[in-house]
Length: 167
Image 1 (spheres, rainbow, N blue to C red):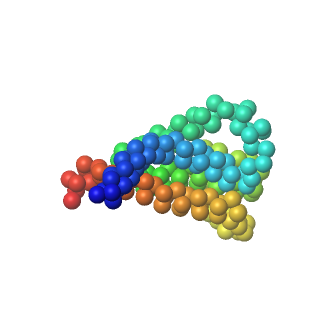
Image 2: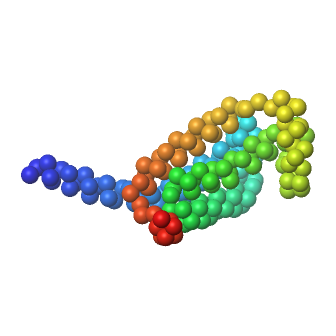
Image 3: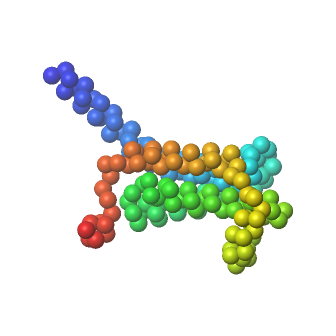
């Protein structure tokens, strides 16, 4: 009898913590993704708060809102949190990586009209001997860990209705 009481107490406690963690996960990981983008784009976060974050606070809030909306759109489409997080992570970190190498090779940041020169960029990257930075490896590890965490956090959630129609 006592085991049943302990089990029901654990289930009650778990049922209140998991919804809170599920609600807190997207905003928190979008902050983490924003920091990973900056870390991969600059190669370091030294002096980031004073030189970039505080003077451009509105831009960072807007970027955070964009990442949060992207997460919720992907999550609404797939109802599979690991996919939503991973796609949002790609959307956040890949531009930072591209910007890092553009700054290193050209001395200026990645600009929108650079998208027209994607074919030339692959040849230049191969000839320039580009190496992966430690911040990029750490970002990949953090993204994989957070993807795994989202898998376990959202594992008993219902799937999207349109996925049922396709099956």
